[in-house]
Length: 453
Ligand code: UD1
Ligand code: MG
Image (cartoon, rainbow, N blue to C red; front, side, top):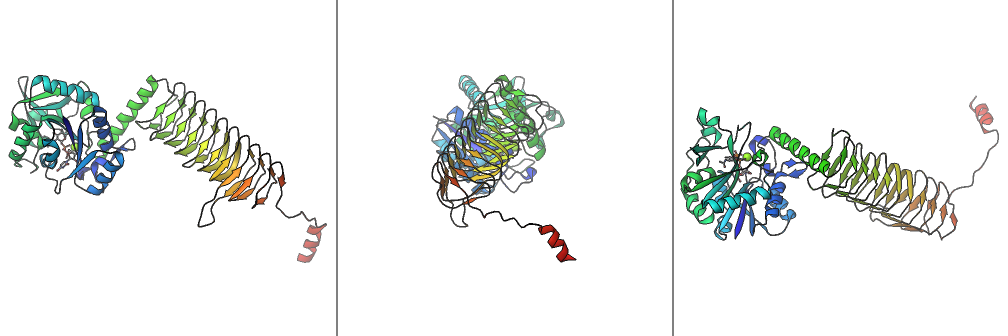
């Protein structure tokens, strides 16, 4: 059985945050989420997270992330060795345990698999995952005696010669559980930081190996905002590269941020200043942007979104939206719909080929196919206490500046006259007019001027 312990208790003083450092985000996903993803893909029998500073926030994130992940509380942040001690229950219930840092988001399941094979074949009791990087400042250095791996030396405890070593500790390790359990009580805090370093276990255990990854990115961690920005930039480019390999088109990548879990089909183009996040899936041949923000949406093929904000919504094939439109959660836009400027749609189902061209709010509405909305229509869905639905049948024609006071129904093929406030059901095929008659007062301007004099 294999277990995984993710260290996430540190305050992250250098990050200057009121939240735990591991909740600082890379591409809008907490660093801890990236590490949990890698652990999930590897498929450990047991996974635990050590919490500490503002534990309630980390616990909340972990429980929302998914089932079956336990948390262990470290009351005082006395170092990575002390953090691991808190998870002894998990460690003693598995044969082998992998320790990961919650602030090093680019560790991946492939590296974990290959390092485990190396760990088993080398018969070591502890294997450290390492990599060579250009700027090793801040990382623990890998001390070798000849080729043999001997120790990890933290930056603060390095001699000037050791500081020049570019092979560094990723903060990810494989331990035989028994060896780790024996070593933990022997850790001392007589070092430059006065902390119990997990890294000292290497010398205590003795039978240690180092698995050097060819991919230097896996070691990168963020202890400061500057390092976090660097991770964001690296992750951003990595995702853009992956999408281009999959046939996604970019004219310029300026201001384009795409989350790690987003999927986009071939021949789709993403235009500048567009942010696409969450579990968004976009089909083929779409044009997304410029200046759009799309989060947790399912989007079909050949969709055009120009200056659109869309959240937790579904957009079917051949839809055109924008410029300057917003889809709020729970919206379904069916095939061939056209939505124009300054339109907001919330929690509504808009039927095929319907057109909502300008300055309209549709909330809590079920709209049929081929409906035409004139300019400036509003569904009044909220009476200050409750929300109500509006139903509009297929091929209805909603005149300009119609107010639909929900709950209300407009039948198929019905028409509402421009400027009407509709408060009762409009039967199919009928016209509803709710407005005063036009009165004409002759020569009004002339009489008015005379009065003023
Ligand atoms: C650690 C390693 C260093 C390695 C680097 C990789 C040690 C002593 N050093 O340094 O060799 O190169 O990671 O990123 O382990 N944490 C707790 N409780 C604590 C202290 C830390 O849970 O008391 C957690 C932190 O939240 C963090 C992780 O452990 O997620 C690593 O701690 P951090 O302080 O970032 O260690 P580094 O200085 O980065
Ligand atoms: Mg760190």
